Length: 144
Image (cartoon, rainbow, N blue to C red; front, side):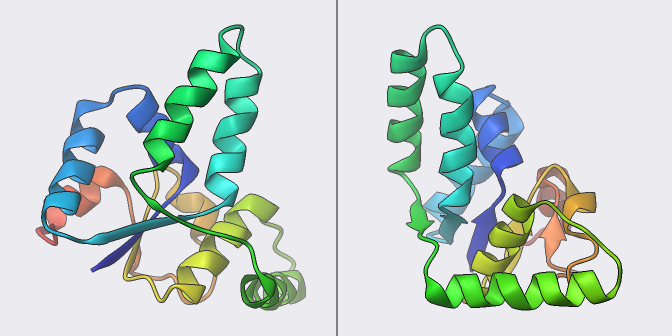
């Protein structure tokens, strides 16, 4: 199974949310492929560099990211971002670039599920219906 992580999931790991940490460990033990867009580390690093203890926080974040596949923004992902944005614009919907890039990476990698604490951020993106779960929903679904 291929599972994409949104930034909100990494924030929960950094906050030591035991349920989210356990979910990720269980997925790793079951050899699920866990990946994320390179946008996720960029958002997290923005936060680490705003901290007084930025050296320690940034080092800790680098260690955390080493456990996952990080998918770079490339021309193929950029094209998917353009397709999604064009569709949304024609519907009069505006979604933050980061979320569109995370969704585009999900499509590029042919992900099975996208985990987030903010489902509403992805609700208007076509092709994600039934694929976006909160950690609690995912644990309750029996898919893990």
